[in-house]
Image (cartoon, one colour):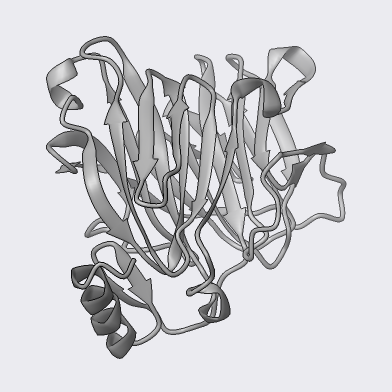
Length: 283
Protein backbone atom coordinates (compact mmCIF):
# COMPACT_ATOMS: atom_id res chain seq x y z
CA UNK A 1 0.00 0.00 0.00
CA UNK A 2 1.08 3.60 -0.53
CA UNK A 3 2.07 6.06 2.16
CA UNK A 4 1.60 9.82 2.05
CA UNK A 5 5.16 10.42 0.81
CA UNK A 6 4.58 8.48 -2.42
CA UNK A 7 4.09 10.39 -5.68
CA UNK A 8 0.94 8.92 -7.18
CA UNK A 9 1.08 8.26 -10.90
CA UNK A 10 -1.54 10.00 -13.02
CA UNK A 11 -3.03 8.89 -16.32
CA UNK A 12 -1.12 10.62 -19.10
CA UNK A 13 -3.04 9.12 -22.00
CA UNK A 14 -6.08 6.97 -22.70
CA UNK A 15 -6.26 5.12 -26.00
CA UNK A 16 -8.93 2.74 -27.25
CA UNK A 17 -7.70 -0.58 -28.62
CA UNK A 18 -8.14 -1.15 -32.35
CA UNK A 19 -9.69 -4.29 -33.88
CA UNK A 20 -7.42 -6.20 -36.24
CA UNK A 21 -6.50 -9.72 -37.35
CA UNK A 22 -3.19 -11.55 -37.17
CA UNK A 23 -1.85 -15.04 -37.69
CA UNK A 24 -4.29 -17.04 -39.81
CA UNK A 25 -7.17 -14.59 -39.34
CA UNK A 26 -7.38 -14.48 -35.53
CA UNK A 27 -9.49 -11.50 -34.42
CA UNK A 28 -7.75 -9.26 -31.86
CA UNK A 29 -8.02 -6.01 -29.98
CA UNK A 30 -4.60 -4.38 -30.56
CA UNK A 31 -3.89 -2.07 -27.66
CA UNK A 32 -0.18 -1.31 -28.16
CA UNK A 33 1.46 -1.49 -31.58
CA UNK A 34 -1.37 0.22 -33.43
CA UNK A 35 -1.63 3.58 -35.21
CA UNK A 36 -2.54 5.41 -31.98
CA UNK A 37 0.10 3.89 -29.68
CA UNK A 38 3.10 2.46 -31.50
CA UNK A 39 4.91 1.50 -28.28
CA UNK A 40 5.20 2.24 -24.57
CA UNK A 41 8.94 1.72 -24.09
CA UNK A 42 9.93 -1.10 -23.62
CA UNK A 43 6.51 -2.55 -24.55
CA UNK A 44 6.14 -3.11 -28.29
CA UNK A 45 2.71 -4.74 -28.59
CA UNK A 46 -0.30 -5.76 -26.53
CA UNK A 47 -3.09 -7.85 -28.05
CA UNK A 48 -6.24 -9.17 -26.40
CA UNK A 49 -7.91 -12.14 -28.09
CA UNK A 50 -11.42 -12.80 -26.85
CA UNK A 51 -14.16 -14.70 -28.64
CA UNK A 52 -16.51 -17.62 -28.11
CA UNK A 53 -16.86 -18.06 -31.90
CA UNK A 54 -14.44 -20.67 -33.19
CA UNK A 55 -14.21 -18.96 -36.58
CA UNK A 56 -12.58 -15.96 -34.89
CA UNK A 57 -9.57 -17.95 -33.65
CA UNK A 58 -9.49 -21.43 -35.19
CA UNK A 59 -6.73 -20.56 -37.68
CA UNK A 60 -4.36 -19.76 -34.82
CA UNK A 61 -0.83 -18.56 -35.36
CA UNK A 62 1.04 -21.03 -37.61
CA UNK A 63 4.85 -21.13 -37.75
CA UNK A 64 6.38 -17.65 -37.58
CA UNK A 65 9.79 -16.28 -36.50
CA UNK A 66 10.90 -13.92 -33.73
CA UNK A 67 14.22 -12.29 -32.89
CA UNK A 68 15.32 -9.60 -30.45
CA UNK A 69 12.46 -9.40 -27.92
CA UNK A 70 10.24 -11.34 -25.51
CA UNK A 71 6.63 -12.49 -25.76
CA UNK A 72 4.31 -12.98 -22.79
CA UNK A 73 1.18 -15.08 -23.30
CA UNK A 74 -1.33 -14.94 -20.46
CA UNK A 75 -4.44 -17.09 -20.76
CA UNK A 76 -7.82 -16.49 -19.12
CA UNK A 77 -9.93 -19.09 -20.96
CA UNK A 78 -9.40 -21.74 -23.61
CA UNK A 79 -6.48 -23.95 -24.62
CA UNK A 80 -3.55 -22.97 -26.83
CA UNK A 81 -0.79 -25.38 -27.97
CA UNK A 82 2.72 -24.00 -28.44
CA UNK A 83 5.51 -25.62 -30.46
CA UNK A 84 8.82 -24.47 -31.96
CA UNK A 85 11.72 -25.49 -34.19
CA UNK A 86 13.92 -26.27 -31.16
CA UNK A 87 11.71 -29.14 -30.04
CA UNK A 88 9.84 -27.35 -27.28
CA UNK A 89 6.07 -27.74 -26.93
CA UNK A 90 3.51 -26.99 -24.28
CA UNK A 91 -0.17 -26.43 -23.59
CA UNK A 92 -1.42 -23.14 -22.20
CA UNK A 93 -4.75 -23.34 -20.38
CA UNK A 94 -6.83 -20.96 -18.25
CA UNK A 95 -4.67 -18.99 -15.81
CA UNK A 96 -1.34 -20.16 -17.23
CA UNK A 97 1.49 -17.98 -18.49
CA UNK A 98 4.37 -18.37 -20.91
CA UNK A 99 7.25 -15.89 -20.93
CA UNK A 100 9.36 -16.57 -24.02
CA UNK A 101 12.70 -14.85 -24.59
CA UNK A 102 13.21 -15.14 -28.34
CA UNK A 103 16.79 -13.87 -28.22
CA UNK A 104 18.74 -14.69 -31.38
CA UNK A 105 15.80 -16.41 -32.96
CA UNK A 106 13.06 -18.96 -32.85
CA UNK A 107 10.28 -20.18 -35.14
CA UNK A 108 7.16 -21.17 -33.29
CA UNK A 109 3.41 -21.68 -33.58
CA UNK A 110 0.46 -21.08 -31.25
CA UNK A 111 -2.60 -23.12 -32.24
CA UNK A 112 -5.95 -23.53 -30.46
CA UNK A 113 -6.84 -26.93 -29.04
CA UNK A 114 -10.57 -26.33 -29.31
CA UNK A 115 -13.01 -25.69 -32.13
CA UNK A 116 -15.55 -23.63 -30.20
CA UNK A 117 -16.08 -22.03 -26.82
CA UNK A 118 -14.40 -19.04 -25.23
CA UNK A 119 -10.76 -18.35 -26.13
CA UNK A 120 -9.48 -15.39 -24.11
CA UNK A 121 -6.06 -14.08 -23.27
CA UNK A 122 -3.29 -11.64 -24.02
CA UNK A 123 0.04 -11.43 -25.75
CA UNK A 124 2.54 -8.76 -24.75
CA UNK A 125 5.83 -8.05 -26.54
CA UNK A 126 8.71 -6.59 -24.51
CA UNK A 127 11.92 -5.33 -26.07
CA UNK A 128 15.32 -6.74 -25.15
CA UNK A 129 18.40 -4.57 -24.56
CA UNK A 130 21.05 -4.65 -27.29
CA UNK A 131 23.35 -6.81 -25.19
CA UNK A 132 20.69 -9.55 -24.92
CA UNK A 133 19.19 -9.57 -28.42
CA UNK A 134 21.32 -12.52 -29.57
CA UNK A 135 21.17 -14.69 -26.43
CA UNK A 136 19.88 -18.25 -26.65
CA UNK A 137 16.07 -18.57 -26.65
CA UNK A 138 14.45 -19.68 -23.40
CA UNK A 139 11.05 -20.16 -21.79
CA UNK A 140 9.48 -19.66 -18.41
CA UNK A 141 6.12 -21.43 -18.27
CA UNK A 142 3.82 -21.69 -15.27
CA UNK A 143 0.55 -23.46 -14.57
CA UNK A 144 -2.16 -21.50 -12.72
CA UNK A 145 -1.18 -22.94 -9.34
CA UNK A 146 2.34 -21.48 -9.68
CA UNK A 147 1.05 -17.90 -10.04
CA UNK A 148 0.44 -16.52 -6.53
CA UNK A 149 -2.92 -14.98 -5.68
CA UNK A 150 -3.41 -12.51 -2.82
CA UNK A 151 -6.87 -11.88 -1.40
CA UNK A 152 -7.26 -8.14 -0.90
CA UNK A 153 -9.42 -6.27 1.63
CA UNK A 154 -13.06 -5.87 0.67
CA UNK A 155 -13.05 -8.71 -1.85
CA UNK A 156 -10.29 -7.84 -4.34
CA UNK A 157 -7.80 -10.35 -5.77
CA UNK A 158 -4.28 -9.90 -7.10
CA UNK A 159 -2.36 -12.39 -9.27
CA UNK A 160 1.31 -11.55 -9.75
CA UNK A 161 3.11 -13.06 -12.76
CA UNK A 162 6.33 -11.04 -12.56
CA UNK A 163 7.88 -8.58 -10.11
CA UNK A 164 6.78 -7.83 -6.56
CA UNK A 165 3.44 -6.18 -5.81
CA UNK A 166 2.26 -5.47 -2.26
CA UNK A 167 4.55 -8.16 -0.88
CA UNK A 168 3.53 -10.78 -3.45
CA UNK A 169 6.26 -11.99 -5.83
CA UNK A 170 5.58 -13.54 -9.21
CA UNK A 171 7.32 -16.69 -10.51
CA UNK A 172 8.88 -15.11 -13.62
CA UNK A 173 12.46 -14.06 -12.86
CA UNK A 174 15.69 -12.96 -14.51
CA UNK A 175 14.14 -10.58 -17.05
CA UNK A 176 16.39 -7.73 -18.22
CA UNK A 177 13.79 -4.96 -17.89
CA UNK A 178 12.78 -5.92 -14.30
CA UNK A 179 9.07 -6.07 -15.16
CA UNK A 180 5.96 -6.03 -13.04
CA UNK A 181 3.01 -7.95 -14.50
CA UNK A 182 -0.14 -8.30 -12.39
CA UNK A 183 -3.81 -9.17 -12.84
CA UNK A 184 -5.94 -7.10 -10.46
CA UNK A 185 -9.63 -7.77 -9.77
CA UNK A 186 -11.75 -5.36 -7.71
CA UNK A 187 -15.37 -5.59 -6.59
CA UNK A 188 -17.78 -2.76 -7.37
CA UNK A 189 -16.58 0.31 -5.47
CA UNK A 190 -13.38 -1.45 -4.39
CA UNK A 191 -9.98 0.24 -4.43
CA UNK A 192 -6.31 -0.67 -4.19
CA UNK A 193 -3.07 1.33 -4.04
CA UNK A 194 0.32 -0.14 -4.80
CA UNK A 195 3.92 0.93 -5.16
CA UNK A 196 5.72 0.75 -8.51
CA UNK A 197 9.42 1.34 -9.28
CA UNK A 198 9.79 5.05 -9.97
CA UNK A 199 12.00 4.57 -13.04
CA UNK A 200 9.61 2.18 -14.78
CA UNK A 201 7.15 3.02 -17.52
CA UNK A 202 3.70 1.64 -16.71
CA UNK A 203 0.23 1.07 -18.09
CA UNK A 204 -3.13 -0.33 -17.00
CA UNK A 205 -5.49 -2.21 -19.31
CA UNK A 206 -9.03 -2.86 -17.97
CA UNK A 207 -10.51 -5.99 -19.57
CA UNK A 208 -13.62 -6.16 -17.40
CA UNK A 209 -15.56 -3.17 -16.11
CA UNK A 210 -14.14 0.31 -15.72
CA UNK A 211 -10.95 1.35 -13.90
CA UNK A 212 -10.80 4.63 -11.98
CA UNK A 213 -7.16 5.66 -11.82
CA UNK A 214 -5.16 8.39 -10.07
CA UNK A 215 -6.07 11.57 -8.23
CA UNK A 216 -7.82 13.39 -9.82
CA UNK A 217 -9.56 10.25 -11.05
CA UNK A 218 -9.61 9.32 -14.72
CA UNK A 219 -12.19 6.75 -15.83
CA UNK A 220 -10.77 4.14 -18.22
CA UNK A 221 -13.32 1.86 -19.91
CA UNK A 222 -12.85 -1.80 -20.76
CA UNK A 223 -10.73 -2.29 -23.86
CA UNK A 224 -8.80 0.98 -23.50
CA UNK A 225 -5.19 1.57 -22.47
CA UNK A 226 -4.18 3.97 -19.69
CA UNK A 227 -0.54 5.04 -19.98
CA UNK A 228 0.67 6.23 -16.57
CA UNK A 229 2.93 9.17 -15.86
CA UNK A 230 5.90 9.27 -13.46
CA UNK A 231 5.59 8.46 -9.78
CA UNK A 232 6.21 5.85 -7.11
CA UNK A 233 2.83 4.15 -7.10
CA UNK A 234 -0.72 4.16 -8.39
CA UNK A 235 -4.23 4.21 -6.90
CA UNK A 236 -6.93 2.20 -8.70
CA UNK A 237 -10.63 1.72 -8.02
CA UNK A 238 -13.62 0.05 -9.66
CA UNK A 239 -16.75 1.94 -10.59
CA UNK A 240 -20.33 0.79 -10.13
CA UNK A 241 -19.52 -2.73 -11.38
CA UNK A 242 -16.62 -5.10 -10.70
CA UNK A 243 -13.41 -4.41 -12.63
CA UNK A 244 -10.44 -6.49 -13.68
CA UNK A 245 -7.27 -5.18 -15.30
CA UNK A 246 -3.68 -5.84 -16.26
CA UNK A 247 -1.15 -3.65 -14.45
CA UNK A 248 2.23 -3.74 -16.20
CA UNK A 249 5.47 -1.83 -15.71
CA UNK A 250 9.12 -2.21 -16.78
CA UNK A 251 12.39 -0.35 -17.03
CA UNK A 252 12.56 1.56 -20.33
CA UNK A 253 15.40 0.93 -22.78
CA UNK A 254 16.96 4.13 -24.04
CA UNK A 255 18.30 2.52 -27.21
CA UNK A 256 17.48 2.82 -30.92
CA UNK A 257 14.66 0.56 -32.13
CA UNK A 258 14.68 -0.97 -35.61
CA UNK A 259 11.53 -3.01 -36.19
CA UNK A 260 10.28 -5.14 -39.04
CA UNK A 261 7.36 -7.46 -38.35
CA UNK A 262 8.59 -10.23 -35.99
CA UNK A 263 12.14 -8.84 -35.73
CA UNK A 264 13.13 -6.05 -33.31
CA UNK A 265 16.76 -4.96 -33.36
CA UNK A 266 18.75 -1.74 -32.97
CA UNK A 267 19.79 -1.04 -36.58
CA UNK A 268 18.44 -1.66 -40.07
CA UNK A 269 21.55 -3.70 -40.84
CA UNK A 270 20.61 -6.05 -37.98
CA UNK A 271 17.09 -6.32 -39.38
CA UNK A 272 18.46 -7.27 -42.81
CA UNK A 273 20.65 -9.89 -41.15
CA UNK A 274 17.65 -11.29 -39.24
CA UNK A 275 15.68 -11.63 -42.48
CA UNK A 276 18.64 -13.28 -44.21
CA UNK A 277 19.14 -15.70 -41.29
CA UNK A 278 15.45 -16.64 -41.34
CA UNK A 279 15.45 -17.21 -45.10
CA UNK A 280 18.59 -19.34 -44.81
CA UNK A 281 17.12 -21.45 -41.99
CA UNK A 282 19.53 -20.20 -39.35
CA UNK A 283 17.00 -19.22 -36.65
